Image (cartoon, rainbow, N blue to C red; front, side, top):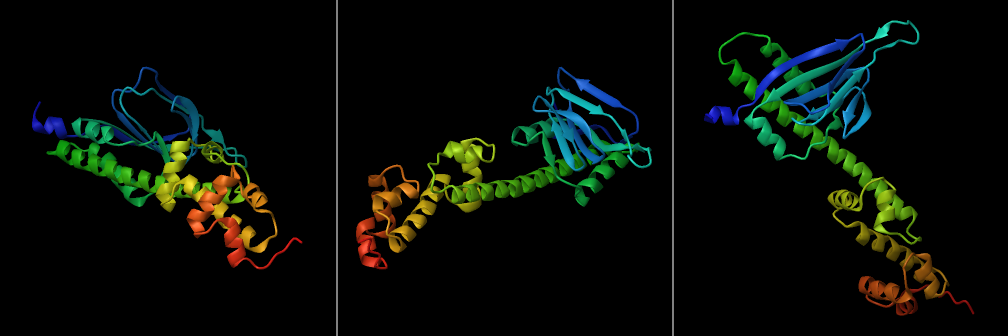
Length: 276
């Protein structure tokens, strides 16, 4: 194989479809090319991770070769006028050594809602337009255009993932703060957002620079500090009410954080509460 054959990417087909009639496609045994599809108008159903999901405007679908693909388009009548509501999408099939190398080095999801980025739409339209022409150097031009599209899509996906990841991290943070006085496990915290412990931990640390466990301890210690200083609760009750598993554990982490065990801290800095 030549150097260009090893490293080029090829656009097999590219177009913009508007469906006004039912349309379905099935590749049960998997595709033999890379498929890119951006929902532009209306909705449809597609196979994502082995399950049929609703695809809405702005949803980007990417399928590598050998992955099963199913699409089901059912245009509907508008409620008021009764006219057919079209279902439209941008479609591109490609292959080649560069695409294979690019995909292997990424961990991109099958579906991401990237919205409608002007650069992405312009590139896609340019590829569609160039593919219809018969000209010299078309293969090389299409190679560069497809690479640019892939890299732009990658940036958009990563940007959306960071935004989504930050949203999830803030939900985790709020859950911890709202349940800090309860026994909390990493499994319970992660379940509140429907993610695995590893994924939740990664998103939280990427957003706040601190582990989920460390933040739990921080919140509990802040609550405990306030109760040690401003309440007349027994210290064992403070430990229990702020979610610590045991009094010895509470004393140890309190001393590590504030430089004094809780009893000494209360005597030294407390505000004179006396239960007697």
